Length: 189
Length: 342
Image (cartoon, rainbow over all chains, first blue to last red; front, side):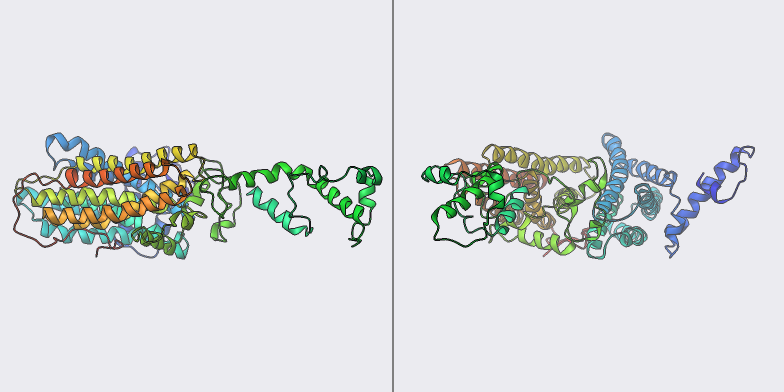
């Protein structure tokens, strides 16, 4: 939907639904590509925010993680992951705004949501490996640790620049904590 | 705010008779004949040569004094509150604001970046609460360090100008996370490793315990202090309670050492330091109250703090099976880098 404005006055009314959906999927993929390979122009790519990508990533993470728990804890695990991802990113964003950061709310939530992608990959890898053999925690820990660093690094550039220099650590620490909580949930699955 | 403003005005007018008690009108002490003799009205006063330094002429001096009291007449009501405030318990030499929140949330911005926009914000807008997060990295670090050193009892003076909620909120959030992680790890070391499963309920329980303790207790204390007419704001109480719990973060990380007596020592030391910090700092404004109320309040605060420590040890770090495991070293746990871990 956001891309339409940049593509000029092309009428999208008479195109097949398939193309419309494909365009949105391409847009989500384009942003995920920028998260995986954080470059200088990531901000530009994430300027048009959408919440489809974060929703898909969050749902994938919640479903994969909740299947690993016992039956009586499964619903709680799903709810907890879902709430932590959404409320956590909202709280982190509001925190950066309160510290004097000049950023838009949904844009920041979008960035934080997309930057969960490395941790979702880690969850998927651990899930698949666990189907065949039991993965020891000493193997999981470095994998998730690298993905945690990746997530934090990808979102650092966006959040760090928007707050004043003397408060950068204060704005970045909640981001690290946010991804650390998710990383812990991934490790102990 | 307005009191200080009036004080400045009073100092600035430079009248040598400023120190005369204003509530005690000097007309009553003076012989009535002076006023009948001079027989003035206000227009006479304004045209009178008041700058004439004729001190030998007694009626003229009385005349000046009288005129000054008439000018200050409308300020009498405004001068009264600070004198009343000085009789209050706990209002020290420095001024204590009466309101619980600032009248103008942007009033205490100290030349920072966001002092550019001096707009009024409504309470549902995010920038309205910016004054609660108006801290720098150094300031937060200093306050965190101070909360672990219970040697000076003036934490309220430190945060009086600028109480923040950044520190308390993130200290509590970190503590909830750290407690759930290390509680689960503690469970792991005291159970069969192959059958162990993470208990995700711990996250919810620790959140309820920590957030509940550090929000409900300050709320009640604030109500009690309001009743005692101490000039402490709700923000001060929330701030000190949040920072007090900071020492539990390294303590909870160290509590993954799966030895019961080591855990007891760690929790004991942490709760001792933070309890002393909390009680002494809260007792400081209560010191001038020579009744038993202050001691009772401090005892209740200390008991509640001890209760939190016992909850931490007996519920979150409970060792159900007392079999000592083999490994005695600290296992690699995901600690966050900014936390002081000894």
